Length: 423
Image (cartoon, rainbow, N blue to C red; front, side):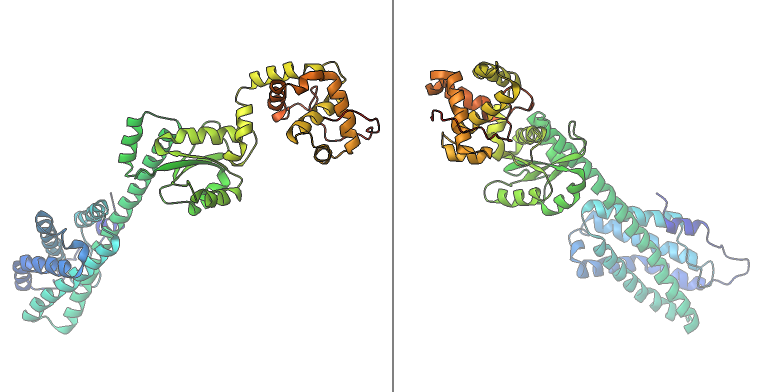
């Protein structure tokens, strides 16, 4: 990959004919002879002062760095022996590319860029101590020494910049690659992929499995702030079918006492929180959250279990309603709605007339009147436990179509003056 330093090197001015060299041939020869010793000293100083490299520079790695130092300084000597002037420093593209690749390798090894920068500072200081000693020994005057110092540190700074650029680019690439691996893992989990596939995906992503995962479905606009509030290791599975405008995330170990904190965080963002499940069974948590979302509900799926059960088989529920509410079928729609809503409230409030009236926003006498009508229609069936169970299930979830016979109507009426039979 080309670097800015490499491009600068390609366009640098070459020496003009007759331009004097900065160092004499004898000085360059003496310095070249000392390059192995300089390289050894540079490596020793880096090991001593940068703990991250103490083990890394042992064995073959240390020898590789020594060779790299010699090559870099040798390239510098070739440049400085050709010309004079403060703009003489222009590392060749090969040197910059080598420095760039060094940075990439360091990123892959897991060492931070600040360790690299420290190593370069130490290398520059140590190299200058040797180079300046030789320069003085060969009679370089003070003005030339100042130019020489500028060239040394500018050259090393160019190499340092190329190395840091390589480290940065490789780190960014690794982050993108790992993010894709984590997203692939999340997709495997929410779709219920085979266990072997999930385990291999987790290993590739270097993701440590938790005890449980909890699926959370949240609007796209909220996912960024939500992720900042969630536990490390949270996975995100974008672009899921049936989730247009929303994203699913899998939160690790949000069970037990930690669930309350997760619910508070999600509640503020209009999301749906599935149950905690063993991490390999995360698809079950996602499926439940998806069902609750499909019902137009939000928050804790554990608060909607009864509704989930009652709507698990829509056809069966419709058949049950048609059978047990058959006595209402011959009434006008408006009358059937009122009796149906009253019967539902009566069952849910266990026949407490005042509670039923409060629930329906009607007078208790209205409740008494309506229940008299209900008893006339259903007869002794209202005293049969099986019928009561069927009616409770049938009316447990209000019908979606308010215009259908027996659908709830909260308007109430004021016709409750006629006495009737209580339950």
